[in-house]
Length: 317
Image 1 (cartoon, rainbow, N blue to C red):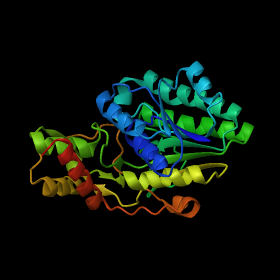
Image 2: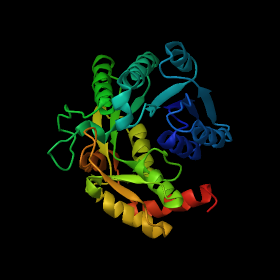
Image 3: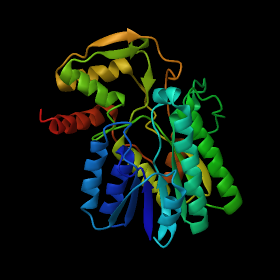
Image 4: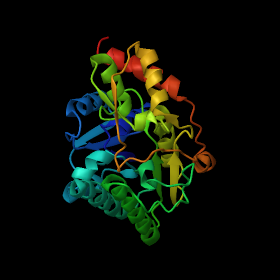
């Protein structure tokens, strides 16, 4: 009786694995430690997880059909938390084939193996980016989400549709969670919170799209993990569920909070918003509250305070 976590050495996957291990549950972590960002960060996460005897770590790629099939052969996997993906909207513009290969073909491999193993639940990490430049605010799951702005959200929307086919044909319980701007300690260095903290520390220049007049619905990692755990614990047939706070904040206000925390002014330069980036992300989380008991508890200012404390310790400041 184990939970397979793909991408389990990454940001969300690593925190999820730690939460399951804290509950005394056995976990199998699969990660390929790719170099989208410094693999040493994920290896540090993996080293901490391996200290728990209930954690089994496998280094490998979800595109490796033989490896994926072997994981389900006799390993007692009853649930899957599929967190692995090529992430990053803007990066996907330059590498669309890679993003579809990992995010769609890799998901297909896992769905095939999970179906044969008759798993009790499958949770798929999706993204608020699938909504694109929708005019329906806040973002609600009934939106068609059929106008993605780049390959990354297109690949994630395709994975959601593929997942429905496996639910339809095999009855596999699958919940697709659309994450909204997840941040927190040990976060991804390519995301804005870490980049702004770096800029405050080093004085590096940061591009400010639309003069900072873009809004994001930042969701603290602990709240996100609580939602994923609830989805794993609550098979629902097939559902797509937003997982976010529902309180967008402008980039300008976000920067002001970080400047107050660090005591540093961030060196910004105006730049036009890329066509791959929407002007706002804004979560309607009513469905998550109803079906999963989701109750995000960490407002962005508190979450950034915790993130800054971790960052300062990480860099010995």
